[in-house]
Image (cartoon, rainbow, N blue to C red; front, side):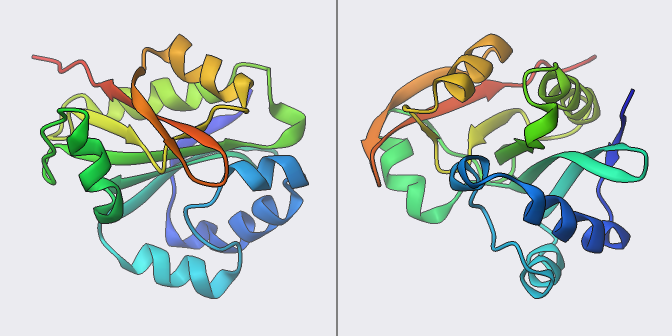
Length: 171
């Protein structure tokens, strides 16, 4: 059973290995940052960026990025759906799962761990980072099963859906 925890900078080399091992199709669906070590170092120097990982036998098998706030270039589109954006309580979310672990429930376990970790904090809503490609029906179904709701659609290298998830708050 994989171990799920927060990512730390000591995991960067392992993360480069994980990202390099992703298949072409999986890589095409995941694009919040380049896959090289220098880009990762720069990415995680920004305190708004955090992540969660799942490891199995000292190997990363799933990775989920969380960025405090929302992507500025997406703000006009997200607002056009009537979404009242809040840089303090919103977070952008981008998960990935190793090809050989897809379809085994690991994405759900990672998401559940992350939501439990966030449920006592000030983040109350997750926005899919750049939406989800509608042609990626497996991912669309995954997000729907988790409780994400679709806000609307936009075209960028094909059709995409903007989706959000309201985090249940404890206490």
